[in-house]
Amino acid sequence: MNRANGLILSVGLLLVLGAAMPNAALAETWNWVLETHGENLSWTSPTAVGTTWADYNWSAEYTRIEYQLGGAMWLDVTGDFGDTKESGIAHALPIDIYKIHYKYPDQYEGDHYLWVDAQGWGEFTISHVVFGSMYGQPITGARWTGVAEVSPEPATLSLLALGGLAALLRRRRA
Picture 1: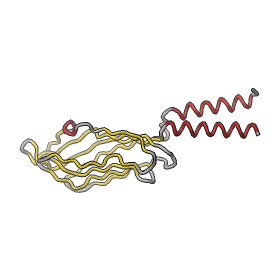
Picture 2 (picture 1 turned 45 degrees about the vertical axis):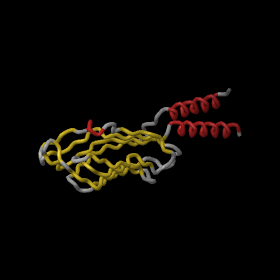
Picture 3 (picture 1 turned 180 degrees about the vertical axis):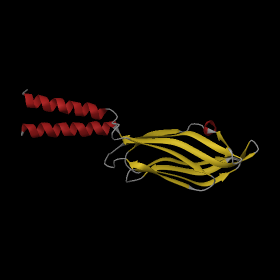
Picture 4 (picture 1 turned 120 degrees about the vertical axis):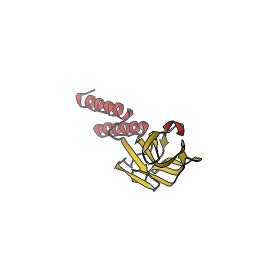
């Protein structure tokens, strides 16, 4: 093997190994804190994920959920909502992450919809909010803190790197 072919092979192997690992540069992580006192909410991510990938890994989690009682004190009720983390693989954009109607009798009711649109932007809405009471106090607000991450699926990146390596080698032979 001559020096040029060895260099191409080395660069190609680095590309394959680098693409096989989760690529943080291609991942988008979005954090939000949304607070409502009964009004509908809408949020759009500050950045967009690339739209050219065949598959995406995604995860989302409510890291803290709070009720405001009596217009003053905030109470952490995250544990009342059970498992607040979702994850999966989507085969194309758009991706529906959360599409949940929460209904906790006498406390909270509302529709939560978190998705990634076809252009790669994270979108989140909370609507149809109805408050009740807790511990004899009226619930006057709710605050939702969370994080979502969307990234190209590593196998897709590996295939792309292998294709690039094959093209380099073919071009070099010609």
